[in-house]
Length: 409
Ligand SMILES: *Cc1c(COP(=O)(O)O)cnc(C)c1O
Image (cartoon, rainbow, N blue to C red):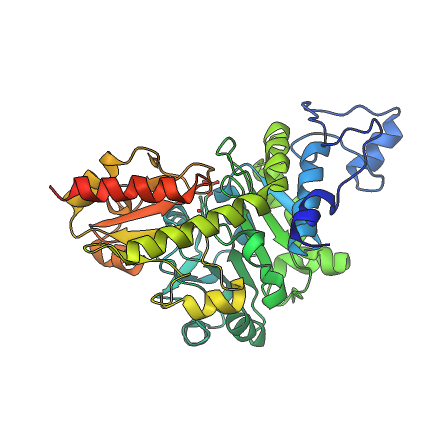
């Protein structure tokens, strides 16, 4: 099965009434014919559902589809991408543990890693995640390496195979937030990643109409209970240990479940991921080439040979450059004027919408970071981030062209 076929037919559960999409089970609880039956369901001894915080058929259908698509053994859906990032880490960590992470992470994730310090979990940041930087930061307390695949908005790409090899040599898992890459560009498990996280609010949902996240497990990492004491009672689940612990402990108990209606919207979005990403990547490439030939504008896009990440984009993403690009305009004032003159591109803090969105990261997402932190994340006072949509490329180029001209005065 190729990608677009897989989106529709892989793990597509049959419905007794022939419904073509998983129906929305908009209920809190599920009743059972006998007390014995509910007891069995509660103890995972019989299939079925009891309460929607713990499991719901619409959410289950979405989890199965995304797990199959990524090539994982299962998935757990969460109320947001941030909930997914948080749960993916807290499922492993305890007080005294350390994480290695890239300095250019999504702002919310950086803030979360700071919050975790209050619980005795320390993060060591590398300017960029490479085999060398990870190797030099690993110590006895390191329990996880966390990175985004395409830094947003730095647009640097991680060499998954090289980094996962160093992690595994030390018995540590590699967790990848693959939101900006999407399963259209890459399946990180094929390159050695152990756990994949998506903010499905973005490309998987695709229309910007529901906040959600998901954690997918490869099933390949062996959780040594000496290093990960929380896993001693989950060892009996074999390759399902990570997912079993997540479902039965921290995810269930923090209550960050995905709403059935949002799972339904995500399943609809997932089915057109391939069509949208094909168009978006093609638009982004055309826009990037237009900017590259525009005097006074500096463009960063992994699909251009000028990008330091171009070789990795070729190797891991089949030459595609992804859906985001950044431009530098010379000054903050000019960046604002340019944004204010755009007619189609909307000024909003989101990515992965069908619409083209623009933002000035330095004054918004990175407003709480120092100038040095901003620069490590590829953010300058004159940077505009563009999340490319599915409009016609000619119209987008015309729109940016007139806004660039108008911004010169
Ligand atoms: C948006 C985003 C998140 C957070 O997701 P929410 O759904 O907004 O909570 C995490 N990681 C990346 C890379 C993101 O773009």
